[in-house]
Length: 311
Image 1: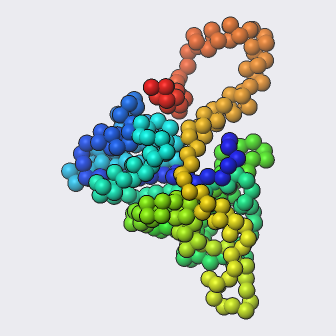
Image 2: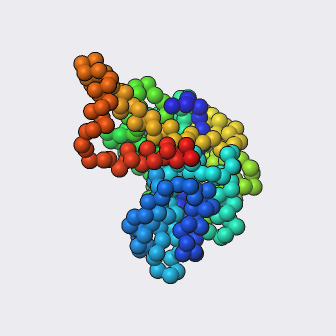
Image 3: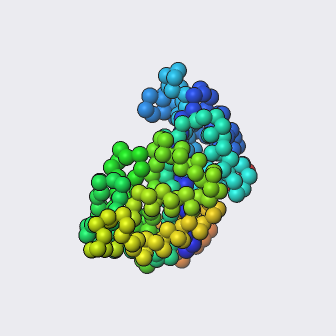
């Protein structure tokens, strides 16, 4: 995992009043991808699917098509799209604007790998009410996947979520990976992309929206207006760091292959190594080839993805 702090697009969902799903495939620059035809959702009868990118179609006449890209789908788009390197997102958003497509959800995330944010400190400051927010709703969650906090209800047009991504991904001990995620819906999502286009800076736009909706602050007993209280040092450092990121930085598909590698080498590595020492590499690889097993779709998708990279 790269230890550089980055800003990424981590979810995109949009609809378009066309009944041709392959038009969406075309603007994604993914005509060469081996799309799978499967069952649709939310009133759509069919969908094209590849690596967490879904293009739903065949709904009512007025439904058009619906494209949804999860975080993994966004990474697949960045790595596999035939659009020019360095401006894939810009070109996609240009087409979305030009065709008056309707964005239903956009997630933008700042990933801290260098220790700017301390999830325990942020949770404590939240419970101590040392913050100001446009939303009255907040919650703190703790589970086997780590700690997280959220400002804004699930139905909000703007929602900010901060969580321990390293714990969620079960990363190696000592890995620092805190994500501050901005989730935007409908008009707020479109407005955000318009601002990115005007500013020519994802970082500047991200920081402007975040600081407008949420600030962690140091109390000032002499000032009753909490919005005038000084921003806490760690929050200011995070915003300054993020604002300085002028160009979008794509992490690529290594996020997904890295999880496979950690399982094979980290969890199963000792058993594999011991078995090879006992029977030899030749017999080991022969047994891999002739074994009978039920294929796991997630590994099939990983192989398809990397074969597509070679096209």
